[in-house]
Length: 254
Ligand code: MG
Ligand code: MG
Image (cartoon, rainbow, N blue to C red; front, side, top):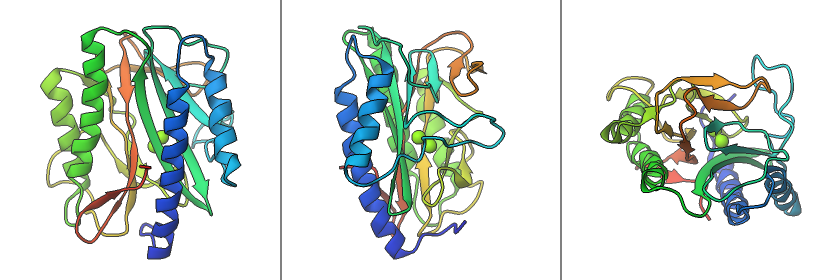
């Protein structure tokens, strides 16, 4: 797996990311009380296929897991952090819903996620969502040629710590492009000036997950859904980005 993408591949990744952002934002608008999480997945898959692209999460089998992921979209509600499997669950007023989606365009994969509140939620929950997104943007701001992977984690961790949020330490960002998960791994915590060097042409997904409670997490028996052990709420945001000659470019925007 090439660690560095060619300029032709980056052109395709830019288009992949734009298409993904369009679909993800359209699905986000459908998140309302009364709809099932399965409905969101169906919309995501339909919109991806409508432009001739494919959903890379469908039937993806992560290392060490026996069953392939059965959907195009991950939908994680409330204390579910990531990798929730869409199904018959009905979204309620007051829920917070994270959606995570990949898209393959001409062989090139991008990955993005966001969290929205449904109806009215307490201020501390709105703040969790806003600050998780800020953690993502601060992490991205730390990216430029010559910076290191640890700089990203340090920037994300600083935002979480300023609010006392838990950080998911077992999961993090990753290289992306030819496969859903590539090297390098990008922890959501770290020390400045440590870890692999960032160089132009690297394409990585940055994805902080913050929670209101303690940092312990559990995996549900479905082999995919990751939840907070203390049932506290969590939020998740993700962009795929490319390291450029002068800094960083976000790929997963419209
Ligand atoms: Mg993702
Ligand atoms: Mg990802």
